[in-house]
Image (cartoon, rainbow, N blue to C red; front, side, top):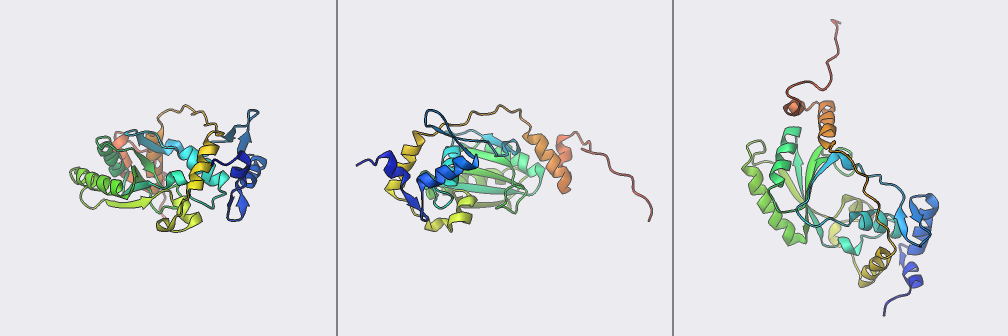
Length: 245
């Protein structure tokens, strides 16, 4: 039997109810409760301009599942049921030249992916990376093999590009624990369905394609001179004059 709204809000995770978590987020100003009772994330803090996406697949529901359910409703104490089958193939690149080459190869692979700067990801020790989004571990293994062969055929990448399969987002493992121990219940699926009916998606803020400019700037600051491939050989900023000590 379907629960009432009050029963859904009374569900507890790590000793705190969903209703309490949502109220705290509203009081903190990170979640807005509209006059019609819908709930909306207050601000888009994601740095989307550092990523280029290959839209070979349906859009992901990360806004709702991660930023609303995980961050707000679950209070970072449970991995959303809707993320249970999310697996990613992570590709680590060493230079901007490799990043752009891998991005171009990914455009020919029928899988949703994103490419850009992993430098600002607090859970990563990599500068450049790409992520293929897949469903299920076996699906990830299939994409891994396809991508590995495609990358090996690209002279700018070679055979030693580091690739791994991971489950869901690193934020989940940091907060909840190892991904091979995640637990999901049918009640969580019902809760997420109920809250999805109250969730108002954020309007997409139109932005220009400035990701490559951000990549070039980061490469310059990291000492990666392969950025010159994309500036017609011109330095991004002039060298300072130095003097004989």
